[in-house]
Image 1 (tube, rainbow, N blue to C red):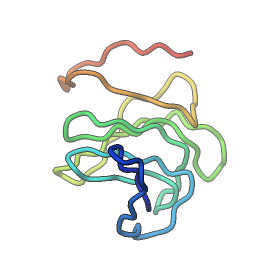
Image 2: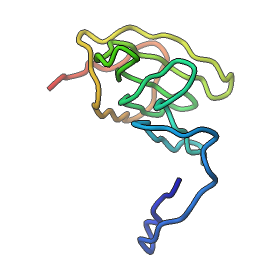
Image 3: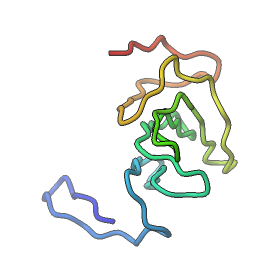
Image 4: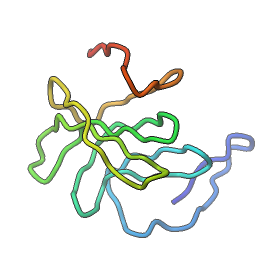
Length: 114
């Protein structure tokens, strides 16, 4: 895997991923890079990911059926555990998401779908 250095715009090679992946989503949080989806025990690709403190939210994507998913899951970095969250109103894949501010664990701001 390679990442660009934003200071000199040169690419830097990182350690190889433990497994080959396709259509994964990358996220950096807490100085670590996470590759989400693309290939694993539960195949899922084309997901949207964002960091919420020490948690990673994974939204939508496609599974083995190749159809968009309504699934929303949260990964707790400290515990190394996944938890299902409420599902999307409509299946989604290949979308983007961003988080602003802090997450209070109790509620989320309304989301506008375009």
